[in-house]
Length: 624
Image 1 (cartoon, one colour):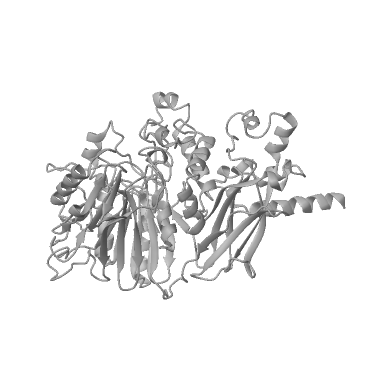
Image 2 (cartoon, helix red, strand yellow):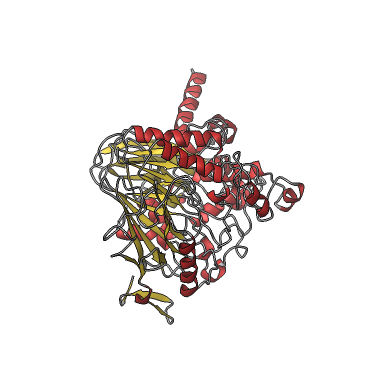
């Protein structure tokens, strides 16, 4: 009987551990990347070395990957703010917990019990779902659970607590998706971000929609962190923002610590607490200019292996993905192979949000700085792909199925600029973008045109600048740059949260204005471009239109809520181009933008002045 009781206890504990999704592998087809719950249970101490008061919710709460009936909830419940060093030396644990040997052993084998609940009201009078789970050093003390049996398109509040105590997390707010294939009762608002670089400034962009309470969901297109050492890319010393550990990150501990450091930014903390996030990675979540076989500074050569700490490409990528999976409120996806993050979200019959991975999954070799001429030569090779054949096939099929369901809009979240962007009169392109994978772009266009898939909205980040374009298959379909006829959709590409301007961190308003004017002159399908401002944009998606509002942040050196409304754009159903105003013959015959270069339109640069004493910019006599 005693044996039966022990077996039952172990089975119950395993089931409770299993509620924490972070013990699973990020990939169903790579179970070795998960954590053995059986082993965790077998070596767990019956009593915790910590009292509830000694445990902390070190990085607040977060939610993400919403469905119409469920959502992912996240927190971290730990005895300290430092991160687990399980893939470093065993003695590393002594630094994290205690120098007492017995205490070290208990801490390294101890677990934390966490309760969670979710309700449609802040007072939790009626709980929609709740549960109990455990976390441990194996998963960096992170907790990720799926709250199920929820109502569609409903705001919920959630909270975690240390078991059998009053030690609670901050109160989180989240929202489910509308019911699949059903009419949506109100326009849906998204805040769209990319490229947050900790040493380059405060993440004010994340906090402004919280302060305005202006969106329903947050969409992040990648470069959530950067892997560089401070000084190699950024100057956090002057701002007190040094990304830890202060070296180029390669180990599992490194990636955990870097994400944890970013999550101490109060505006990022607040955004996660108040909005559900839908995320995808770019390259810097792993390393610069990644592709399926390597990255810019680590190409599986003997020289790069030695230089970068004796770690292989695959091991470094596994470390980065493991940490990302632990720290982000993201689901485990049904994966065909490799490390699939590409997936689709259906917002009723209003729009599908199709999230791509054009970086890590199966991308052909990219520009690694030393091979630019070679990449230029092969940029139109039919065998080159940003996504790989499996993802390409899924993407094209998902677009066709969306159209067949009569979903109104198709919103595609990808990392890099899709539209052609010529950077010189002689035809200089960025071959790390879709311009370096012309056949893949042509296949995407062919799917849209041949299957009459319209109302397409492409989204992009990565470039640290703002771009708005008509989507045009140049050379195959006619395009009228004045009316927009011939376009099959539009592209909105946003600037960085804090990463520097692509022509230099200290580029002036005048310098960037000239460069933007040069770019719009070279690319007639490019309707607006701005290089100067860091920022973000908001999308309001309804049945009558998609509205895009771009915001610029004038001051990243301090935490503040300043922002400037840079430009606003409209897309009407069936027009497949940026809406033309007035008599329909110009992009903006009655409109204007605050900054940047607008095709055949007006820029109100004269209304913006710079206060040299404070370093801030003012519009129409008041700080924005």
